[in-house]
Image 1 (tube, helix red, strand yellow):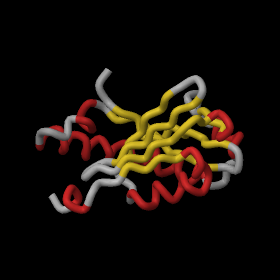
Image 2 (image 1 turned 180 degrees about the vertical axis):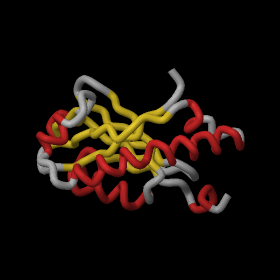
Image 3 (image 1 turned 90 degrees about the horizontal axis):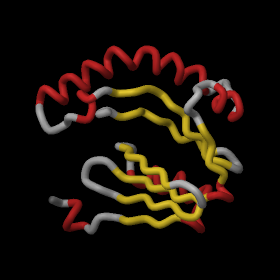
Image 4 (image 1 turned 60 degrees about the horizontal axis):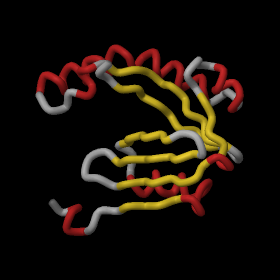
Amino acid sequence: MLGSERLRLLFTNTRLIVDHAGKRGAGAVAGTSILGRLSGALEDLFKSGGESARRRGIRNMSPDQVLRSHRDNFAIKYSEVVGVTVAQTLTVHGITILTRDDKFEFTTQARFNDVVELFTKTLSEKLSVRRLSQSELQR
């Protein structure tokens, strides 16, 4: 199936919680054409209201309540993490989390340094950061 999911990563003292915020259809990932970008934007308009309401409610939830709030939410214990790689690109940055049993890959448009800072606070000894060179950033 073509599409993507919008996820939120929540950092606690002992684990990382993956919270499902919403789904996006094929239009959201068809960024190569203007019609694809427009349909993704339109889908965002229609979906963001419900996601917004959910986002407001999550601030008042405990980590266990967040986990129970969606059937696909799950936690990754920091002790289970073997390594984390945060890779900078010109558009979306990549996050790869390798555990003893699984490999998770995420992308984000958040500021690269903010993403690195979040993972440094919790998993610094397991963190690998791949930054673009100055010449690559100036392209």
